[in-house]
Image (cartoon, rainbow, N blue to C red; front, side, top):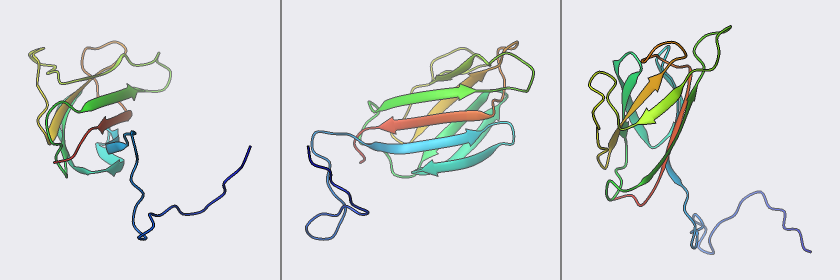
Length: 132
């Protein structure tokens, strides 16, 4: 078995390496809804605090269509309480209705331990797909 150790991988022309038959995240967001503040992000234009337990994310470089793949993990309400229920994508807390994503926006809904809607501290989302 061989071991390859490098600090930087570049294409033969000196640019970024193209992934073959693989996908990389094109959008990532670490958001604290309690403050509210973007902690760290990639390809995120803004986050609008719509209501308690509800926000809309705007992506800087849009996806080519609305069928990109999302992942979400949301947790932690306050110390001394059981874990929060977590988060859902594309759902409105007030109406319970579906809120379909667009090529550049998506809605996040978060629920606390003892309430239907709650601003959570650790919200992580990401999307994989082709950019426009």
